[in-house]
Amino acid sequence: MSAEFPYVRPRRLRQSPAMRRLVAETRLHPAELVLPLFVREGVSEPVPVSSMPGVVQHTRDTLRKAVVEAAEAGLGGVMLFGVPAVQDAIGSEGTNPDGILQRAIRDVVAEVGDALVVMSDLCLDEYTDHGHCGVLAADGSVDNDATLERYAEMARVQADAGVHLVGPSGMMDGQIAVIRRALDEAGHQDTGILAYTAKYASAFYGPFREAVGSSLKGDRKAYQQDPANAREALRELEQDLAEGADLVMVKPGMAYLDILRQIADASPVPVSAYQVSGEYAMVEAAAANGWIDRERMIMETLTSLRRAGAEQILTYWAVEAAGMLK
Ligand code: PBG
Image (cartoon, rainbow, N blue to C red; front, side, top):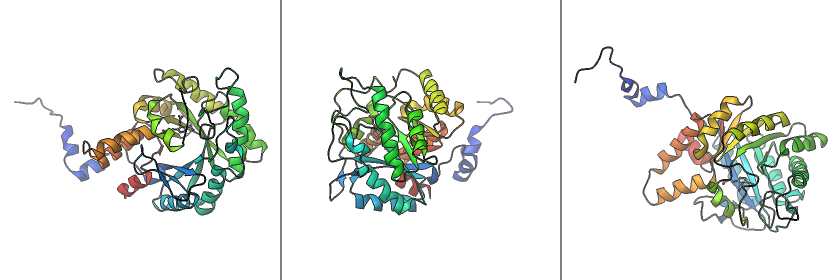
């Protein structure tokens, strides 16, 4: 076979590890990784989440140890989820100043607050007995504006506990504005908002429901986005920015790389991605069967999120990935 001259040989830049390292466009760093953590009220031992091998619901004690480990690994932050002992229709424990999440925030800020950005989920599904992200209207639908009042109160108690960034994940219209105002009026001007901006109604959240003991029957399609739609993600972005979001997030990760790229191209504020429970579970399950190379899969999926525009990545592999990056 004779080749045309000049002969284009992209393989020259792939021929050695040193050459590949020199020309890599995308790099991962532990500082951009955020570890989601679950803390459960009333348990004396960590409780494994069976659909997420390696992930547990922490006790307050083991949570403290986990965040020290996260800080030592050089992570950027942690995202805390509370699992209360009692759920009710309005998610009362979510606004209890002594509720499990608020106690955990205090513990974690005291332990590693200077080394890590401490974030907390601001949503009602962990706390409601029906499992929805808000309070219900008489007809059983999620009442947007009544839910916003609950979110405002959640923002206040989480900020009082010292959290650095609240993470509203409920996809109610107007949630960022209401939370921003509640924070400012309570003197928490410096508490930021990591907005779940483009959050899709996804089957990839399946294992998370076990992790937070959610009893949801049905789905969240009336408030989370339709996987068929990309354009409305840009509308959500515009709205969240206008309402005061400090960072914006796309979720899930791998099945939404196109959305991530579009948001990253349009956003003047940092863009995060959440590699969710189902993404984690799929890789762990396939690896447990010996079907894939687990470590390469972890790095490849994280790299793809970074390449698509994520500047922060929430991932259950954060500590392990940071170790691999050293
Ligand atoms: C809502 C919330 C969910 C996740 C993060 N925040 C669940 C949902 O919207 O159904 C999912 C995270 C994951 O799957 O890892 N509080």
